[in-house]
Image 1 (tube, rainbow, N blue to C red):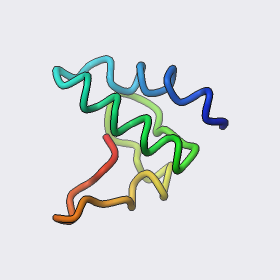
Image 2: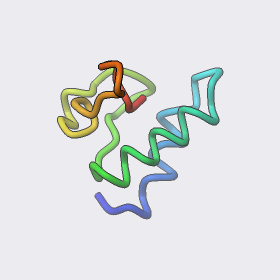
Image 3: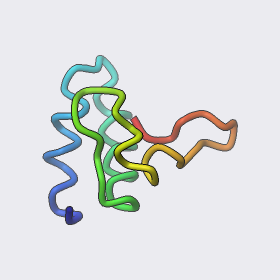
Length: 64
């Protein structure tokens, strides 16, 4: 996957959430770093280990 694919993949990933702006912001940030967006609207993060393992300072998931 390449970085120019991130916006489209994240648009789909975040399409079901009520928190679109933060979802898109963090999804694109994670995608640009990891070059991977898990399939579906949520879950499936084990497919993208980098995306799944990037945590916030408090230890929560960074990527939606």
